[in-house]
Length: 287
Image 1 (tube, rainbow, N blue to C red):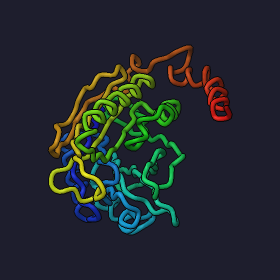
Image 2 (cartoon, rainbow, N blue to C red; image 1 turned 45 degrees about the vertical axis):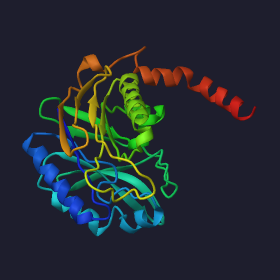
Image 3 (cartoon, rainbow, N blue to C red; image 1 turned 135 degrees about the vertical axis):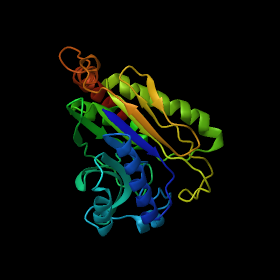
Image 4 (cartoon, helix red, strand yellow; image 1 turned 45 degrees about the horizontal axis):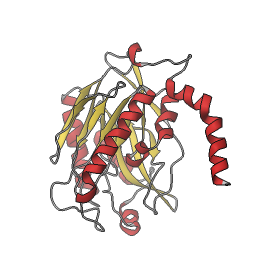
């Protein structure tokens, strides 16, 4: 199957402009015969670093904004993954929606959100896409910092996901940029290898003056990529420019569906050592 990521720069709080970019990216992805296309974390609203602005631009799943997204993208065949700040009652979530031809298939909310105004997601849905050449492919989503932890990707892989999309919004200060660059790649390589899945890191990029993050100085450097189940980066975007990443992958290749005592390696590890880990953790917390 062919997948894509639009490494674009969102406009903070400008829903209409960001939706126009989604339509632009969807149009190009369809021309390139991509079957799933993702956009950066919180792309539709911008990723504000304070609660009042984030809440001001957020919207609900049953809002007019959502209807406008579904209507504007209904003409395109690629399955869409795009992020936004979601209002859910009084709560605010960092969420990615999944839709296809104007139908909302579901949402995923960030489970390791480090902004204090975001609630933590605790549901890990798996979605399906019927492809031209590879049958039905199951995929899941995590968001940015979620990829630094073992369990979210493991849960999705145990549920059958063969591809995990990880939309990002990075804005990294100069002193920590190289450290961040190296650690993120190491985390994502580990997630791909330990679960024998394709891992899609889809980042943003800063072109002009940063509009969303106002309380620190940094740069959104791009560097979106696809890592295969062997830990190899098979495709990556350009850095520091807007770019559309395209990649042909083979998620249902039997050679990539690693079996370890009848189940995947990560699932086997969780089954065999999960109880011991919990016991060690309890002992540490109560020591």
